[in-house]
Length: 336
Ligand code: TYM
Image (cartoon, rainbow, N blue to C red; front, side, top):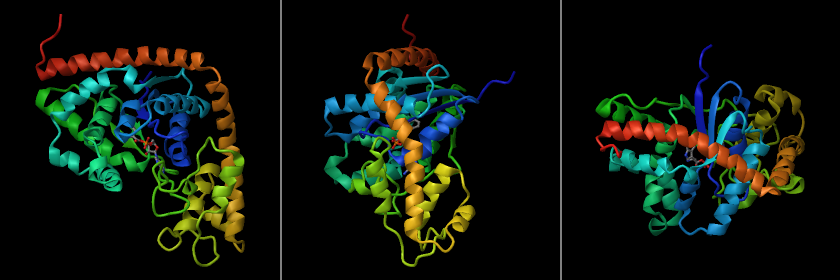
């Protein structure tokens, strides 16, 4: 029997709900490959502290809601190790070792840091936001995964992770598996409905461009129906000259599994409004059952805690073994 490839991924608990980009770009591909792989899925709550001015009660609540959405979306805690990052102290410990291998210029080149720090002004960015990709590298390398399934906005961080793993291995000996990003073929980038050249994001100025999977059917349909479209009336995929229609087509393709050319045929001679109605119906059909299941799970916090404790113990067993090898290779005296 050949061993299953190992995967690891996570989504920040930085909003009240996952949005459709998180779902199509990450959660759904995780679930689809759950049986063929050995999985580690976690909630990076330490990363959420980089928001600086956050409310601790809201963060704890969002961490729980994110766990519920993972499970409601199809993560099976019997098949996958599901845990919260701050429950496994090895993440922060490995991060320090990797920080000392990361160049200042190298960290400065991360586009997500540049975008986020530019949005809030220089004072809003904290050092945690700057070193965030190094914590992400620690998250990944502790579990020795072969693949890291993410949307394409996280690809640069996985590239940095690979560089750090290779650097550590060549300096101190082969400790880390060098992981590969795995980007889904469809849904890798879901765009903002009001600003269809930007990715759908929890930090966008207006929530109207976002589809949150815990929103009511009515709100979801309303947001899709008021999505910006383009000049002309033809339903045709052309990202450069028709970004609004192309984004809606992308969502429709990802949710229904139809090809872009089949969608063009389906809407030949029809108006943008027809496409919006179809997209709204398809998205609601996909996410409404997840919302309902998440609400049921949230009604039983003790059961969620029990599942997280099982995940934490499984995760720590792997993480502590890796950290011991790292400390040993890096010349830190064993503590006996
Ligand atoms: P986060 O929480 O911003 O996003 C979680 C996942 O959702 C994907 N995603 C999208 N996919 C398609 N279209 C979009 N508009 C869209 N927006 C977000 C992201 O690519 C991601 O896969 N740094 C990570 C969290 C993290 C992590 C890790 C991930 C921390 N440690 C280790 C993997 C491995 C982040 O902020 O993702």
